[in-house]
Image (cartoon, rainbow, N blue to C red; front, top):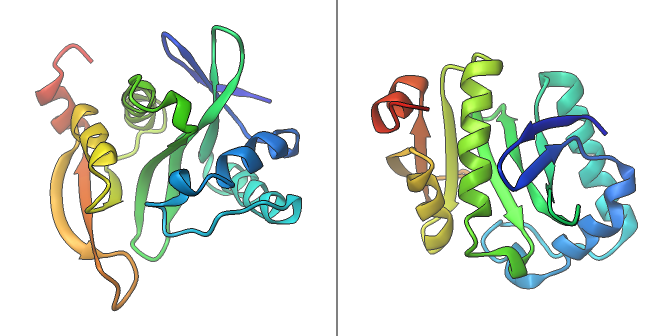
Length: 179
């Protein structure tokens, strides 16, 4: 699998069918899925569908959600990356990690690197991130990565409000001049 980004502690690489068992482990944990709006997934069929979507994004857009691997030990800890949301015409930053890796700064580390990659390598103009209002940890990651609050708005028509954040290269440079 192609390595996309390396940080101090992480490797972000393309996802493939060989990641199915690790992905089932991630998607089968109710606490992981709690703030995603998605159901728990425990079958290979369900995970294969998810992985195919990720691979399709790489082919269509040249980016997607990437597997996050710890450099030290080479273990799977989750995924992080970008996805195009055609219903909004926006590119979304997202992340999902196994609970045993929560609170260690991996989501922030990955998010900063992904924003840098998105703006400097992919030449994207704007990146957003969306979270349920109750997901305080995810909102804090967005803020620590340099993103700025945009609005409260539904993700689906008629649904409850989510928290929307955004950033562009100017905002990142303003908050982190050396980045």
